[in-house]
Picture 1 (cartoon, helix red, strand yellow):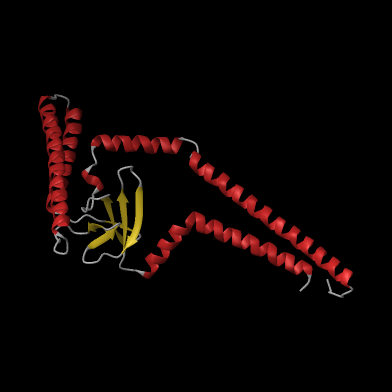
Picture 2 (cartoon, one colour; picture 1 turned 90 degrees about the horizontal axis):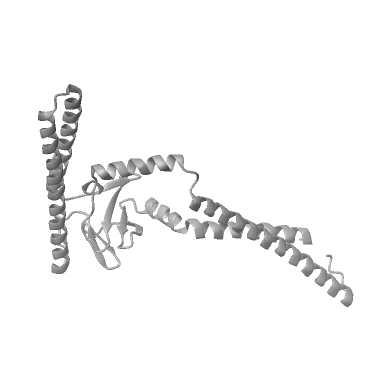
Length: 251
């Protein structure tokens, strides 16, 4: 093996190792989750939001309908609590009670809006306005019915890539349903956010990530060049040693 072959091996090995390290640093957790999803087909995606609004993503297989995360239980079906301790069962009951209070509050809010619209409908003389008001009344009737159905349905889960997905708040064992918190005001805010995201320039964070990737690639190239330079230096030093000792090293 001559010197140039050694240099090429060191160069490409350095580049390959650098890209492997970059991939593991950037997407190591995602790669691990992908392998777990492939191996454990009965698993579920679990999202837990903490008080600082950071969301942790896990992929776990429920045992007796329970996920154990940081020694805390998160259950898939609040109606099945036989495998919980008395303290954990009390947390589930409190969570269900809070959920019922929250849903009933939303139902009362929706019914109040519907009654106000019914009064406006009776007092209006404009047929177009009455038609619009009636469509809003029908909408609120539909929302109230959905919320009443949620009072009877305890199990809440979504699906991500054909696997069940559950959402929790840190320390609360009851799975959460986004639509419990959804209101007309929320809808307007979401529409405004979507409109702004379409019209605004590329996200600064994304640009920062691109710049970081460029820097990492430049560092990797510098490391490869340094490795090649050191290989040349080592070859020259070995040649000098061979000449001084009168040896034929074949370099």
